[in-house]
Image: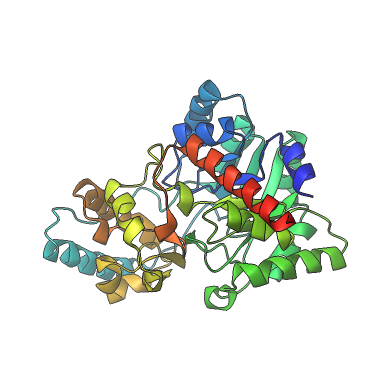
Length: 360
């Protein structure tokens, strides 16, 4: 399964750089793809034209396969404007207390229109497309397959993995509780879907086989080196998806303060957070999380995400990592700052070494 998965995608290594929305760049994606992995654009926050611009930039840097990752969301969102006003007041007061000269504002839209993002994805025609937060429609699946785009669905439970398999996905990525960033959960409450990767992975492989859904399973969550990649393979994974491991690469657009904080992360500081975006996500418990306004905690995604966006940008510019959404996986302190291509080479060397040692 490992070899056939890589061959189908046209990549050398069973390694995917996670589509981290807001942190990927054409330089990062192309570097990973040129090194033999599958680089991924985190396009969840991008307007359609920005998706096309990034695809063009990547095409100028590599002719190797890459992926584009999107969120499965409705086109429009309703918001309780009274609750929004109260949250804005409390968020602005927090920024004032922290000495940042930035305040919230009402955006033109709470999020890019998902159908327009999908149309841009189809026009860009990457080798693969990955999705989180839900299952795409049969019409969308057909549109992707007509363009020979490999479809990867993200799941946090066995039931979600089966939903993707039944929906026609070419592969499913299981996101263990250790994974950094937004939880992809869509059939359950987020708290009920915090399943460790090394339990979720074999359970999913077994369930797919029992339902005659023999599609590759990709492992994600807490994988930081080649040993971890091999461990997931032993449990049935066809490939590994790493996100946090790439955050400290110079090609990654994560804020410098965020990058500086990661090597010092204590394992008990990584927690599930809603106060930055309104959707459960894994990251560092920092000053913002501890001072999170009560009114803001009640706003849903993407409303709260849009309100805090200018605050996070200002915090990044001021070097205030403690006021950023410092998303990271459980093993964040194992990051190794180095260029992305060198990291891919290092990961695969560790993977091969661990495989030889296991054979003996």
